[in-house]
Image (cartoon, rainbow, N blue to C red; front, side, top):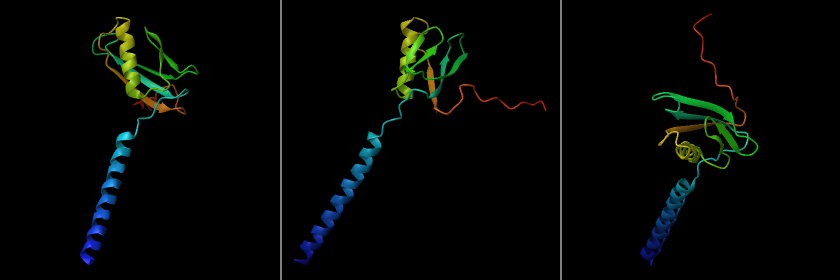
Length: 126
């Protein structure tokens, strides 16, 4: 009787451990990347737009309509997308307009309180 009770306790403990570890793993998998919002300041970098090996970078605020304006393609929806989704959308916009077949794009979100002006590099002059 005592061994049956001990076996039940061990079995229940194992089930709780498995359920907890599965829940934790599931929550890590279910976590979604943050989406961009109206008012966020983002930096979009497009490789090879003006010349091979040259990056074009635009730092801009997502407008009230949820879009940003980019060189040569104009307005692109940004709000509601993740950084990686916007990268894909921008790449597709340049391909659609036959400007860059497979544009390499990176997006970085600085949040709503950032400046649209990039930080200045320290000067060697004093």
